[in-house]
Length: 261
Image (cartoon, rainbow, N blue to C red; front, side, top):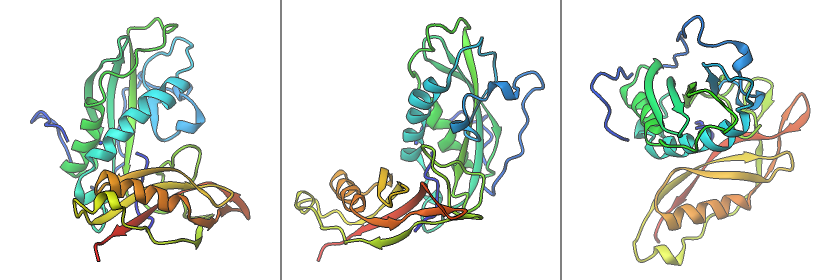
């Protein structure tokens, strides 16, 4: 199944947080807070925006290698049940915050709501729980860096949801990869004592060679079953996705179900 983003982590929130589901992209920033020159790099388009002066510093490596991975992994852990199958509720959340020179994250503000409290809560909490991140780059002389981060839930084929690591999403002119070789997962011996069963949801990128890469767990069952699911899917092979007849890397989601006989 290929249902949700898979870009991407619940902590209590202040009662004043306005949280809310149908896809919402309507939000505004102050007139002088952001301009196109502050887009950190093309790979992060539609994912993150810088809202303060960069003082000429290239923040792409810092955001791509440090900030986004930390927040994304936390967001996936905190993703509510309604964002997962079978409900797979869609939504788009935008959160504003500031990273200070020591790496602390402060001054969070919800600037784009999904319309669903639980979806908004997971997005907000993933940022709060990731503090502190690495300190801002030494050559940056400012006191803080302002950011907007977009969280997409189950946005679906052809949506504006950004895929991971330079991949694209199926839909519109992009044809999805086709599974051509797979084997079912074996129940790991290490998990038989616990008797764990269930379905592990995975996000992966099918490369232009048809091989899965960058496999991450979206919905966990247990460490042993998660590991086996990743190992199993890593051996699957696909006809790669295509765009205008050319092979492209496409992010998809798959599920692996474990039962005890």
